Image 1 (cartoon, one colour):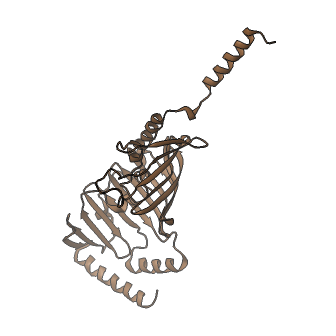
Image 2 (cartoon, rainbow, N blue to C red):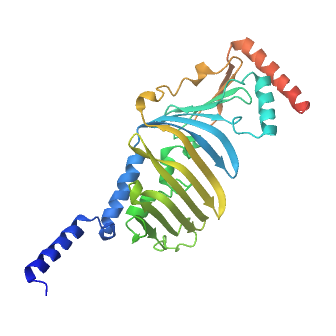
Length: 324
């Protein structure tokens, strides 16, 4: 028969090993919520980044995208010809040759007050006074803030699933270090009920292995269904959504993949208002006010640029009639 001292020593050893072993299933739901919020907040406050990748929307590839930002100031270039199929590539090449823009890319920048958008297809630069970050950027899945909400609906923030006070957030432990946070019957406290609430039921799944960031989400309500997945990797000590897929009503909505990313601020551009000085000769430049009403129009190169612009438009029209 085992002696009492030996049994007591064995019991204490087992208790010690259990105490030293991580037991994530014993974490308090409030702790899980705090960790999720901390990771979401960190991404929302990334000060700057340089991102290169591919995006698509409703099955249409948008080409290679190069995005840079510092706070609310943003810059983006799109290379549509790089991923175009043969027939489309032929059309784009002919267009750029006729307009004299083969060596230029569609470039957009936002300096916090104005949006500058250069389109090499028709040799135009639009400069608009705007009040908020333009949709060209908020709808781009390469932008970190895009990874904080359900698809294209920036009102459905993951943060709300965690901290909304009026409705209970259920926290469930899943396998392999994943947690599910869900809310149901949203809008039930409204006078008219929740029949027309955009999202009535929703959940997010977070993973301990990527600091409790969202790897899967789902929402359903009056506007239909929204769902998505994200695969996270780390660069420069920061997490980023390297790949992502979204569906609406069970059909493909958007998809992206990141090929390169850097959070080194020293590599990020410092100017976000210099596009007017960089566009090619003969570019048509149009200024718009906050109401999107035209204020002025000019041409790079003055009257000579205006004459050249018209000649290039005629050359493009001729190529179009010839069928490229």
